[in-house]
Length: 485
Image (cartoon, rainbow, N blue to C red; front, side, top):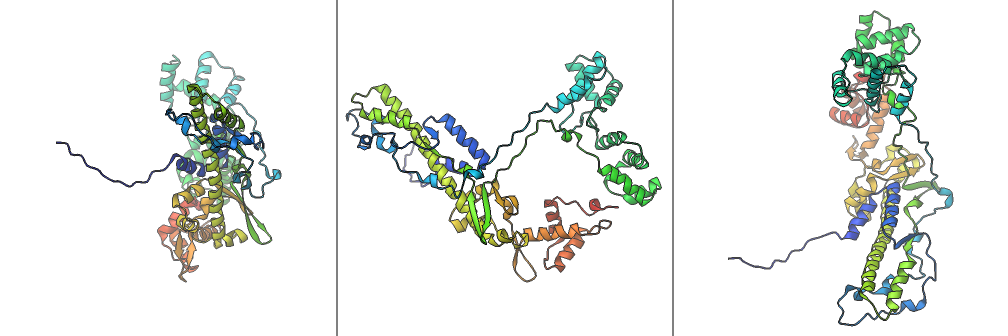
């Protein structure tokens, strides 16, 4: 037998408006502008610019009585007065703090050049090659990656030529054509390994004793060079320390990624637009939100007039009722979007203001040692919002400060106790660690154990593994790889 029973259940669900707001909050300025443009394209009831006052007659503000009671269409439940615009200036227009046309972001035009592959093909056109050599050379150029390397074995390239181009050749033939491709610019192009790339660049230079020695080091002792076993190199090549230093200096001038040096390549150029600006005015911090986060949007007067026409009509056909339902959906969507933008501006400003006040000493001085330990929960508790909301604001937003443009999440850090029992930011420890490494003796760089001991003397008792973790986070190599001659 089937049993039936009633069950009461309390659950939380996010409304579409809340989901829309959360998505808008996490967008940085540029992505937010794209989202606004997308909404403007998809919703004809939403318009950009200042709203014209007095566009509607005053008699549209009368109450809507509806149609006959027998009609069940949802259009009868619409309160049209809620969709008719008035002359009141919306609050979202007043949220742009101290923004003037002088602060407009200037667009930077970028020239559209030819692709890197086409750049190499154009150079091939100046070299005499028979039909088979040309086909092989063109295939090799097509195999060059964005860094300028050919990562595939010649045997695989020979197979691909046979299957795709119907060209049957030996590896020796491909090797011979590869030498021709490697003579193209930039130097080092079409190399298969890093050492081959560097050697190709050195061979383009004037042959001096330092260049010859550098080529021999890369050709015969590349592994020892990469591991900076300088004592072994001195013994193997029977040279003085000064000669080795000159050879290493020549190698350090080379470009390990020759493909990246091509200025005409179509690369994605990341243009950071600060979402906030912090200035010091008369010794006080002043926070402003980028004006591009406060677009002037309003409900289309044309759509409002359509509703007004429906309201005044005596006979309402089914097609008119279907149209008014469509208009209602678009107007609702437009209203929700404008409200979400308003809430986004308020959330961004309140969150960043709390961060600025929490790190006030740093923003006034620029001294990273004055950065307080700060986690997401600290700001969430201060503004009475959820941690996830603060995370959305901090993860992808930038702030323009007197000390440069910074990613907001960089101001968040954990805390540690110093010898005096005070809470200090891990950013402060990293800054001191970076200074110690920068000032170390380059011939005998400090190991992680010695770095931990030095930090302990400075009042920061941290373990060796913690030093190693901080060093890796800052992108600093181990002591052996920091060694210089």
